[in-house]
Image 1 (tube, helix red, strand yellow):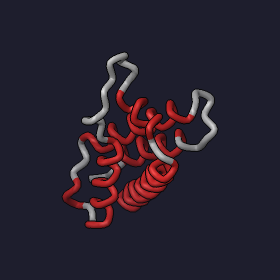
Image 2: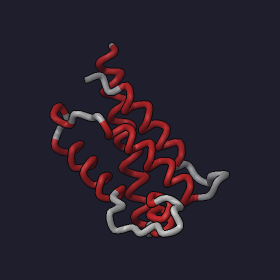
Image 3: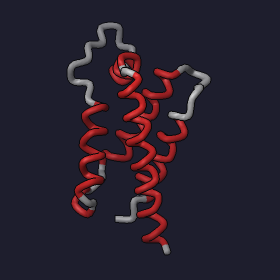
Length: 112
C-alpha cells in the first residue's frame, strides 16, 4: 500500500485543526473528523505496526458518534466536536498530527 490517500486526507485534517478557524472551532474539528474518516475508510491496517494501529483505534474511539443524538440534524460530528473537552481536543490534534506525519513518511518512503 502506498498511503498516498491517507497522506492527503490526514494532511488536510491536520491543517483544519490549526486554529483559529474562520468557521469556528467545532466546525474545524468536524471537518477534520470527516477527513480522518475518509483516510481510514479503505485503509488496510495489516501492514501497520502495533503502535500505529493503537493510534488509529483511539482516533476511531474519539470519532465514534453512536451515543450522540441529533434531533435537529446538525451533524453528529459537529455535536461531538462541541462536546469535546480541552484534553480530548489536544488528544485529537496530537493523533491527527502523528498519523499525518506517519502516512506522509510511508508514502514518500515508498515513492523513493
